[in-house]
Each structure stands twice: as structure tokens, then as C-alpha cells.
Amino acid sequence: MQCEALYDSGNHQSPCSDQLAAIALEDISVHDKVVIRTRNSEYRFSVIDPVNHKGLLSGGALGDEPREAFLIESRSKGESGAVHDFRGLKSGARALFYLSSGNKVERVTTSEIFGLTHVKAIDRDSLIS
Image 1 (cartoon, one colour):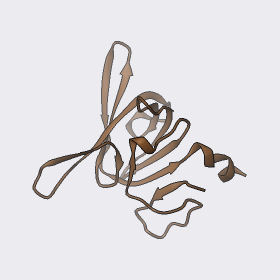
Image 2 (spheres, helix red, strand yellow):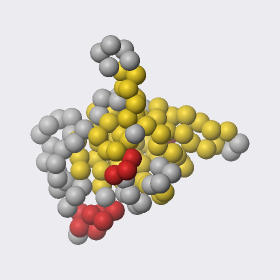
Image 3 (cartoon, rainbow, N blue to C red):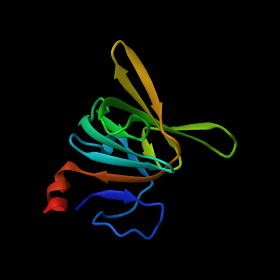
């Protein structure tokens, strides 16, 4: 199995392999699922088009109905106050998504990410069985 996870509790046992603090955009494939945990919310991102970072996003302020979304990056502030961008999802940062809504585009920024779970499509069958 090559499912990757980060758990803020440090004690959680999982069928996933090594813990990690980030998921780079180039490591996300079609049909992968990513769970993004913040202090008060959980978001789910199901990848449709990894080249364009497009998927279905639900959870948090969006509710349970999946919406078409584009993962842009994660942003965090360093100790000096400078903003650091990461092309993907990163613990300690805030994820930035754009959602299409009719003739306009909505911007969704999560609160600080405390945990990430990346379930690769190739491994989902073995996790279910």
C-alpha cells in the first residue's frame, strides 16, 4: 500500500504507510482522494484531472455537496511574516482552491491544515477488501 498520511495526534494507527507533512501537486493522480483536516473542519478533494489540479471538493464551509474545484497551492507565513507558497497541500499552511459558480469564480481558503490523508486510487481496492 502506498497511501500516505499525517495525523496531528501522533497516536493514530492507519493502514497507510509513512506519515508526511505535504502532498505535492505532481504526486496527485486521477481518482486519488485527499482528506484535509483543519482545527474545525474536514474537506475532501477527489481528483478528476491532475494535470489541471481539478477535482470535486466538499466539506468544511462548502457542506457535503461536492463542488468542482481547482487546487491552486498552500500558503503559510514564516517567522519573519513572509508568505511562502507550496505547490500542493502542506501541514501548517492554508489550502487555496478556486470554484466555478455560474459566471463567476469563488475563492475558498481553508484554515490552517493540521492533517492530510492521501489515498491513491491504485490502493483503494486493497483498503476496501
